[in-house]
Amino acid sequence: MFKRGRAEGWLRQPIDALPLWADFHGVRFNGIKVGSIPGLEDRGSTVIADRDLTGGKEDPLMVVPKDLIISRQNIEIIAKADHHLKEVLEAVGDFGRTTRGAVLIYLVLQATIACPDINGIGVLHPLTEYIKFLPDELLPTFWTEQERDLLTGTTLRPAVRAKLSSLLREFEAVRTATESIGWCAKHWWDEDDGQLTFEDWMRVDAIYRSRALEFPGVGDAMVPCVDMANHASGDTTAALYETDEKGNGLLLLRDGKNITKGGEVTITYGDDKGACENIFSYGFLEDTMTSAKTIFLDLDIPIEDLLRPAKMAVNTAAPGFRISEKDGHIDWESDFVWLLAINQEDGLDFKLKQTIDGQTEIEAFWKDQELDDTSKLRTFLEQDRLWDVYQLRAVVLLQSRIETQVQTLREVKMPERDPSIRDGPWQLAGRLRNLELEMLEKAGADLEDQKTTIFQSEVVQRYLGLFQDEAGADEEPVDFS
Ligand SMILES: C[S@@+](CC[C@H](N)C(=O)[O-])C[C@H]1O[C@@H](n2cnc3c(N)ncnc32)[C@H](O)[C@@H]1O
Image 1 (spheres, helix red, strand yellow):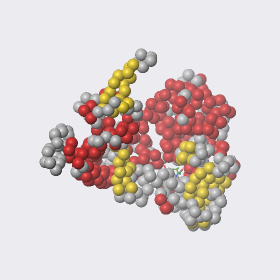
Image 2: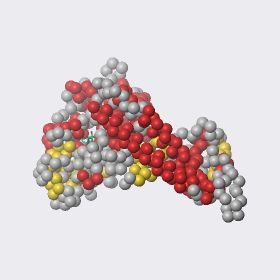
Image 3: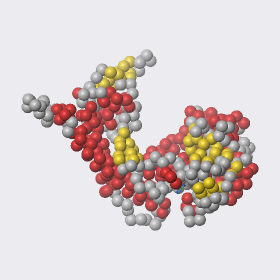
Image 4: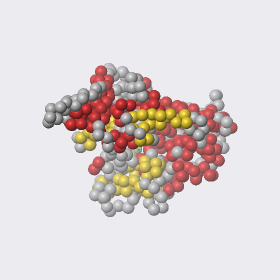
């Protein structure tokens, strides 16, 4: 539907028509306009100062009436007057009650309303026109297989693979849930005339992913016109977004920020987001990004671990760890690694429990204390006299996982550039590989230092049988492997 609508023009509007749309629907612009900046056309449209703007002295640069905000609450309100939207939202169940689910369904319905072959479906809404201004972002879900191959060894590779699988599952679930609705069967799913394709689902997902912002008091939402602002981090962020006491969306120039006429009025999409997430959600990396910032690596419980099935059954933590870099210093965090770091001889135990309905449930224990949430395991271990030993094991596990990742990145080099590979994916993949490799190497070195420090601890030395107390009596050595 989107591809056809873009090509035939019924799902496309030039950005020059935005002021008219905004004016008609009560969006107020103060000293700004929306368009592209000469020389930066590859960044699409953005908010531009239409006169000199002085921070601390300006009224809101944009006021967007609250009814135009695409939030879960507003979609529920719109659905009260649009029985087609309501029918689909109800049919998809819990998914339609999440913000993302409601917005994706809503966007699909707006495209359906705009389609000239489909009549009498849905109620026209200002947003039916607005989605025509939105460009198709080249997010990695739209990269070709060859372009995605460039990501091998980066954390974006598994993220994109998982996203594509989950999008396909969602699309099939929406189809199954709605194909018994007459108009959906006819206009969306009919083998010959049905208009809705998996590519449409990918497009609405990309629109939401690249444009939704977290609004105080509203939650995640797409706010028309505010979502035309491009991103800049740190001190270069020019404006903030929030809602006023009536719930209208606002764009506010930051105090102390002066923008001369023609300058860009940027917001931040989140300064802490890592390089992987930036490419995943927005399809670009800021030129000033010199660190991958944060990397999540998966961890697997080794096959040789006899408790693997039980550990997997009780685990409640994300199976991996995150390393983050701030001010040149690398930190790691993981609720999962502790489950890998301990075993039965340390005090981990499992019991089978019969539930009231006759099912069997597995329960985990740490030294006779019930472990109902394995993500809290660290708090138990911290109090244990062998805490240093568990820390050492965790560090060794993380270090080995990082080494594997580094090795893959080093071994699988960027190939010769095939002419079919587009410039965007080529540049982004190259930069991401370098940023992640550099940060992983730094993290590996930092963990080596941590390992050396923990290794010196008396607890570890005693545990390994390397400690000699003053009387010269050796501790019984313990097999650390
Ligand atoms: C919320 S939209 C902003 C408006 C968008 N440029 C448009 O034309 O509709 C987010 C998208 O804008 C682009 N973008 C935003 N900030 C950027 C930046 N600093 N550099 C390059 N592209 C940027 C990316 O394509 C991103 O997915």
